[in-house]
Image 1 (cartoon, one colour):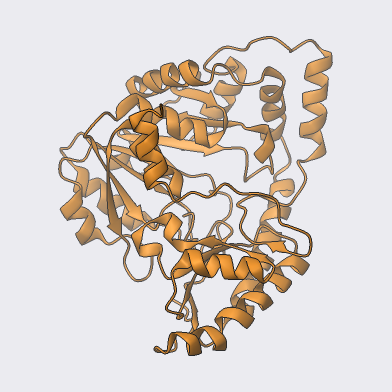
Image 2: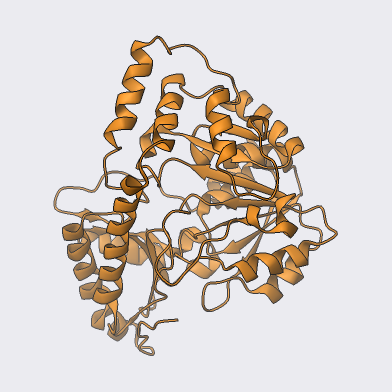
Length: 389
């Protein structure tokens, strides 16, 4: 018999089981860098295996890796290795903190559209998801947050944002700190895309904001910055009591992370900045391509991405996003349905530009052909144009 909690998760989850693109199709669905892992990282893993690093590691992570990560956390307080837990990707970090701190009936505020894992984890823990729609520019609606936050056990968000590509500004974060003043609400800030911020925008970590620092669990991953998705290296840092509880949850569900992989992660931290910079520059060019190809297309509207490698594309066709995603798949381009990311995501599809430029051009052309003039005509509604905000 299926457990009650799992039955509820299956009923409410909108997360699809993704598969490779079929022959002839291009995928703009995956949030995965198309770059290979840098060779020094691979070589470090091989060297660790040859050196005999094939046994269990400390369940919180190699002390030297945790110390290196602590030294790189934003300033404002003294961080040590004991403030950091190395996890099986950011997914396990998020799961650990939610399972360690959220119980039946606890309310968790999620500004949405938002990464769909957040809501699934809250449901899995028995908590209550409180979705709060974003403002029209896809930044936080602070008035709506002010109404939702009192009594909330937690707020979860990503910055830069998956799926919207928005970079939440320092003043937004400071306003959040003011709204939470005097409360016990825990903040979980998923900053997986912190190195992917485009010209004209500035990334501010929640840990840099004094009013948030002592209540924030910072979640990070090697996946996006270092093209290490398959290596499954993530980590979290934050208040010691929460970190210790999350470490206990993680070791219960996952155990320690692959030892040789942790040595590879140490090598990734020592990569020249130009290695990461070159990948970030490629994403910047692709972002410009996305904006250029979609600009002025009747029936489509995009708030230009400020960070990450996603575009959250609104279409005029009067069809559910899951239907639109299925129609696009039939036309050999894979995207994610906007409804996966929350109620406000309906009427959108998410595209990823973590794809080769040729595939990106091909996919965008297929999207425009299906949802541009044809989409607006089929909907019979107002034509929406891309605009810059």
